[in-house]
Length: 179
Image 1 (spheres, rainbow, N blue to C red):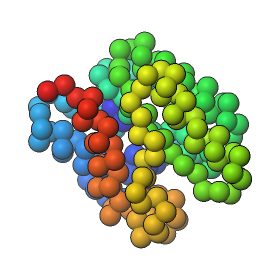
Image 2 (cartoon, rainbow, N blue to C red):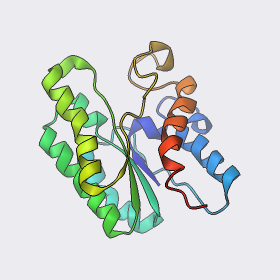
Image 3 (tube, rainbow, N blue to C red):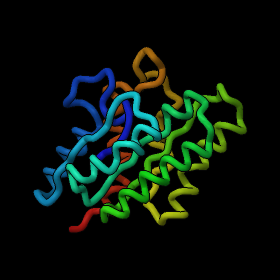
Image 4 (cartoon, rainbow, N blue to C red):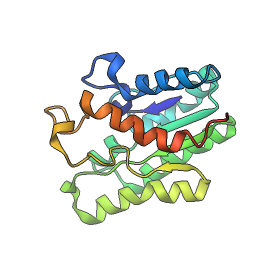
């Protein structure tokens, strides 16, 4: 199950072109043992994710959850501790429901200053260490600074970027899958 925001819900893209759908196709080609549920909602914050994780876990009963949240919180300048606390509650809910977590980190533009952006970025490796999670440090690694991979809003990855996100996720996820 992918539990994220607009980066995972395919904002501004034809549905079949998003990285989650590309991942679903890859998993199907590798094994019939894995299904894929995209429980991502555009605009999701860590608080709204925290409020709906239990229902998503109960409904879908995933073995693996890819958590891709926090970007909207950071862009709104929300307190670092509340972002961390909400993500931690989501992780703990996943663990209580016997789901393994892959945490996908995000970086912010420098608008809020180096201190805030660094503290934000540090949330992900800190939580991964604390909860012994698999971590993708930056979802947009390798292209996050290249305009040609983004929609005109400059925030959301375009169709060209979706394969790159897939490869970033796959690099970590493939080690989590059972043969």
